[in-house]
Amino acid sequence: MPQVHNVTMLGTGLIGMFYTMTMHGQRGRDRVQVVYSRTADRARAFAAQWDIPTYTDDLKAAIEDPGTDTVVIGLPNHMHVECVRLAAAAGKNILCTKPLGRTAAEAKQMLDIVEQAGIFGGYLEDLAYTPKTLKALATVKAGALGDITWARSRETHPGPHSAWFWDKEAAGGGAIIDLGCHCAEIIRNYVGKENRPLEVMCHADTLVHPIPAEDNAIALIKFESGAIGQFEVSWTFRGGMDLRDEVAGTAGTIWTNHFLRTGFEMFTAAKGGYVAEKAESESGWLFPVGDEVHELGYNHMFSDMFDAMDNGTQPMESFYDGYVINAILDAAFASAKSRQWEPVQLADWRAAAPARRIGATPALVDGMAVVKEERMHGNKLKQILCNQATGEIIERIIDLP
Ligand SMILES: NC(=O)c1ccc[n+]([C@@H]2O[C@H](COP(=O)([O-])OP(=O)(O)OC[C@H]3O[C@@H](n4cnc5c(N)ncnc54)[C@H](O)[C@@H]3O)[C@@H](O)[C@H]2O)c1
Image (tube, rainbow, N blue to C red):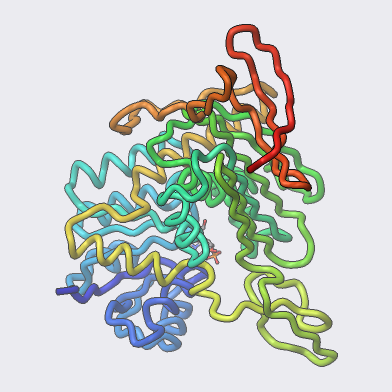
């Protein structure tokens, strides 16, 4: 029987709003009962807007409120550790937004805190839960794409909406920490979470904005199976928020587009009002998003989190995943600096066994391995074959019956 969860929401900014909108939408039973904001005025206004009974500007009091069982952390990155510490001391379930930490060391601290306290630690990585990603992941897990060789994830937009994101110290970096965390976790899901990330090669630069952090980056992640992950992030992309993923395997490919031009296109010469997160215009040709919290994965994410709490299981995205992601991003920052492949330092790696190397046993024809077969006009088949003893490669065309 599902339980009802009463939530303390920390933060009344963009993500606090999205999370609350998700829980309070569609007649949901799990609701925010206490909201914390830095200023009492903002807390009061947010509580009134979302029909939340208790509001406060006292962080500790919000976390310790006896009327809630779950703390949702929607505050800037540099505050996550402190919030986790306080919530664990209060014995609450903890759901923390991305990135878990600014570094793997910080994320590991949070992982240790929840594990030692024996409490629930869910990592709120919504983009792994978009409806398209969940469907694609199920397809990949069922083997429809064969062995995954490559996964690409792209998140780009014109830059974040609040000052603290641009402060390298408070955020822990620029576009890599802010957007790369989403991309790297989408990639991990596709290549398999038991597939150890080994090394990262990253190029990062500050091309446009007058900030010390990177506003553009591209990185390759090498996994134990031989699969390659590729992420592209930017805070200088113009035209809204571009969220696209691609995954390729030995038997197939999936391409997904989650946000721009996904089948809802409109033109207005007047003002169209709110269009979508990070949309740059309210008029002209616009690409609205139907149900944004759904398209961005928030509904499925909270359902998974609360179901896991009720069932005493791990959610799809846990604090451990947040730690692995921070370790990948640490390697990306190190590589951007050294301009070399850098190892992913994972002192705590939990896969049951090493990942199997990609590659099927080749079919044999006349003692030679089939490299490729191609159907041709006239009911003929071209075969490219490799003599495994000598390495010689030949091609031949045969008539099909
Ligand atoms: N898709 C996602 O999962 C997603 C999207 C956006 C943000 N986030 C994450 O959510 C967190 C918050 O981001 P946001 O977009 O809501 O930011 P925001 O700037 O919109 O809101 C931040 C909130 O924290 C408060 N705050 C800022 N500095 C504070 C301080 N020193 N002490 C107390 N309160 C402070 C602000 O008043 C505001 O209520 C970040 O960790 C961010 O990475 C996740």
